[in-house]
Image (cartoon, rainbow, N blue to C red; front, side):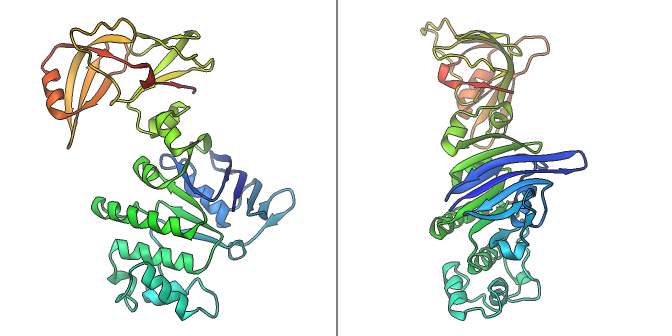
Length: 349
C-alpha cells in the first residue's frame, strides 16, 4: 500500500505546497497550528480540492489536475477521523458504527468492532453519554468498519486530558498495528509522534521542511523549523568558517567539529539535556564556554537552568537536569559548560 501526494493550494495569503510518499506505515504530519496539516488531509480525503497536482492511493488516482480527475470523497475509500470525532449525536454506538458500512451493514462485523474496542454494554448509548475515550473508540470503530484503504487521523488525541491521553496512546498504537494500512497522523505534539509514528514530515507555513524516520528526526533534525518543533531549546544563528569550525553568533562560541560542517549551515542547535558541566579536574580546551547564571526555572520532575552568554543581543542558554543539581548550580555566579560534538545540531534555514 502507498500514497503519493504532490499538491499546491492557495487560500488567501496562505499557500500549501507539499510533496511526499507514504508506505504501509504511520506517517506523521507534524507542525504548529495553521501550518497546513489538516488541509493536507482534507485534500487527500476530497473534502478540499487542490489548485493543482496529483494524489494517488495504491495506484489509483484520486486527484490529477492535468487529467481533470477529482474523485468524490465517497469514491476515494478513505477513512477520516476528525478532531472532535464527528459522531452522529442522535445515533447509538451501534448505529454510529453502521453509518459508514453502506446499505446492508453486517451485524457480525459491528459486533466484532464492539468487542475489539471494548464497547460492550455501551451499544445503545448516545454520544453525549460517552466519555472522551469511549467517543474516540466509537469513531475508530466506525472508520475501520467501512474498510478504507487508508486512515487519516486529524489530531485524534487533542481532545483528551493528560491521563486519558496516555492510556489512549497505548490503545491506539495497538489498533493501528493490527489494521496494517497506511496511516496519516496529524499532530502538533512531538510526544504523540514519538510514541506512535514511523516517519515524520515537518510542515512549516504550508511548506515541507523535512521527511525523516522518527528516530533520525529526533536525533538529528535537518532544519531550524524541524529542530524547534522536535524540542530543541537552544538555537543560534551560525557562521561557517571552515570544514571543521563554526561560530554560534548569538552565544559568541566557536565550535570545532571532527565531522565536516555542511556548507549550507545557517543555525546550530543544542538539546538542553546534552550540555555537560565538566569537573574542576577535567581539562576541556574546545567547545567550552563560561556563562553567567540568569535564573532557575523549576519544572515538575526536573529543572531548567538558564544562563546568559554575555553577548550583546545574545540568546540565553538552557540546561535541563535533575532538580537538586540545578539548585546547587543556580547558587553560583558563573558556570563553565562543555558541548560534546554529538550534541551539536548543524541546521540549514
